[in-house]
Length: 467
Image 1 (cartoon, rainbow, N blue to C red):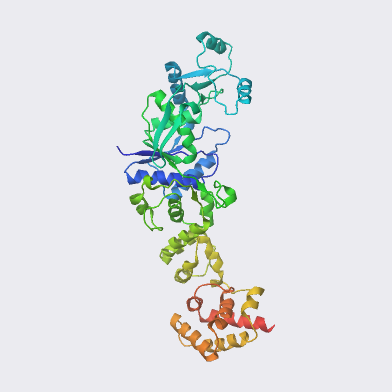
Image 2: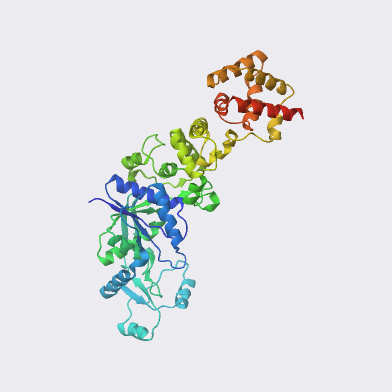
């Protein structure tokens, strides 16, 4: 049977990186085995769930290319079905009503450091229950948990996990306001959606024994469980906003490509079994195995993400990258520049880009530097520098032809004739042309800027240093 998996986010906030990694691994597992990848929006928290978050979650999945196979299901639409299941559990005696008050339960907790509900309404007489119902006394509904034994399951990542029944109590499946609890709704939804494999974060491991008991009480077949290691921040604590931009939309706004995020997240807790680190979605689908998911928590590293992103950008054709940059921010370049010029710009700076937004650091292609950093000037502009730049400018004006080789030959000739180190010319030259001491290769930069612009900028800085 082909597997059916689901991604079940709660629309109580924006989709975060941990959620994306869970969605990705479910997607890859489904596609690897010709199965289905479904989405269920768990929106039963009426106070915190918002339609705008649902829209953002679905838009993020679309942006990342994680296409689901059917229309998303909203958990809030399952109220009638949950009530049917609860009634069946009551009729079969697998669940019972508990009329214990909060004060009674608190008194029990105060006397027991490790509190487990002692089943004070588990075996009450029918007349006691009927009287409470007649008097409209609020109640919860609890699952009648077996009195002894263990709950055991084979986790696809962590292996066999066993919980003693003595560590569990008759837990609540319906609150006093009549609403079903998470453990019940998730079991009903997964069963009704024919979910064959439940792949989710390891923070759900503690829920799994309770859910298995509900499956057993209902006589339903169990899915296969696989729990994914947590993603931690650089400080070893659970990833949160304090570690930086963790919302999917934030990464999109920062200029990361969706394939960069997908590639990096695949490396958080999984590896292909070789030294490959840069791959596309097809490679992931063909090579993903949940058995290769690590048990150890993964560390989210922005530096590694930037490296992956830079490799993805570098691999793209400059013309394609230009389209992506323009779609991201059409204001990055001058309006009067044609595409041929812009493609040349992209070609010589793309090895310096980590994100699409980094193009803004290279505005010197479109406007002359105005003012220069004092520290940069002190570092590269010494007493003989004006003379060096002046002689280079004189030779530049007489130059016949204009291409990378001609410019490179001119630079080397000037350095040789002046008997100076390369840095004595290159650093002030770069500062004059780009307004900074770092950037693309000088011959490439000058070739794209053009002879007239280079002459003007060198004259500008010489004039400034004479003031």
